[in-house]
Structures are given as C-alpha cells and as structure tokens.
Amino acid sequence: MPTVKNFSDLDLTKTYTYSDYLLWQFSERVELIKGFILKMSPAPSSNHQKISQNINKYFLNLFNNHPCSVFVAPFDVRLPIKSAKKDTTVVQPDICIICDEDKIDDKGCKGAPDLIVEILSPKNSKHDVDTKFNLYLESGVKEYWIVEPEARIVLVYSLINEEYIGSKPFSEGEIIKSPLFPEMKIAVEEVFLRVK
Image (cartoon, rainbow, N blue to C red):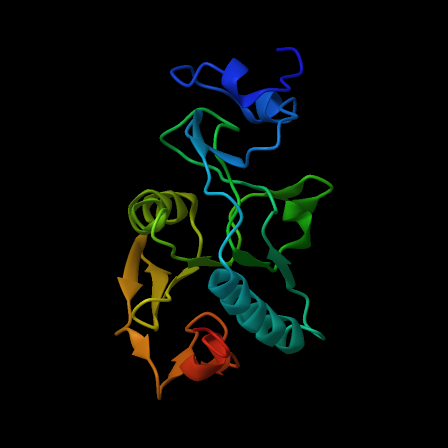
C-alpha cells in the first residue's frame, strides 16, 4: 500500500493492518478495530484534558520509582485480538500503564497494557463502553477504568478468569482503589479537580 495523505482516499469498507496504518499521513486521528477504521473525535474538550492530567499526574508520581511506565494519548497500543487477524487492532487509550518493558517499542505498545483509563465524552461513550470494553477484555488488559465526567464517577473493572468484574462505581467522597496496584488510592475529587 502506498502512503496515504488524505483520509478520504481510504476505503472504509476494507480491512487494514498495522503496516497500512503506518503509511497514513493525514491529520485525522483514527483507530484500527479488527482491521476496520474508526475515526476518532477531534481534540478532546478542556474538561477531558483536565481529568486526563489529574489522573496522569497521580500515576506519574505513584510510578516514579516503579518498573511500570505511564503513557497518555496519542500513544498507539497494538492489541492482540484472538478473534481478528494479527496486527489489525490499534487503539489510543487516554492513559495506560505498562509493566512489561518488552511490550514497549518506538511505535508504542505491542500487547495488552496492564491498566487502561478511558475518559468518556458524548461522542465516544458507546465506543469506550462497548467496543473497547470487549477489545480490552479479549486482549487481556488486567484493569480497565471508565471515567464518566457528567456523573463524576469512575468505574473499575478487573480481569478475573477471563471476565471483567466491576466494583461499585466510585463517586465523590470516595477513594478509588485499584485491585491490580494496591498502593494506588486516589480520591474521586482529585480526578475531577478544576473540572466544570
């Protein structure tokens, strides 16, 4: 496949691979879901950015002297999806933590991160709650957080026996606790600090 400079030159009914994805040089942000292109929303809102920064600041401080690495979007994660052809799923989670340094290369992450955080926005909530939930489950992401800015809640799902088990939603006045990282405890108010 030659280099593609315009999103409109792609056939959205066709399936693609990560090799194709690397040849795309247009400005639109996309993810590759089991070979199919999904156009992402334009730049996230200021509230989305504030939430991402609040969580990222906490994670960076927590993992400062830890073998795990923290990454924020845009950061390509190539997920191993058993029900799809190899190298046909590339996502850009809002935040991810990767503890296996062998999964990290110059292009991003090859394999399932240990923890992924997705911050919902009105245009992506179905994608993050349904599609990505199932992709992360199938690829073996050990913990998945869904942050819901409108309701000011955080949902935490842990991978147990190949199923996601959710805790009760964490809301204001509560401390988010990670089953995967017991030392991780963040107040819900810190997640939504300075968010309107």
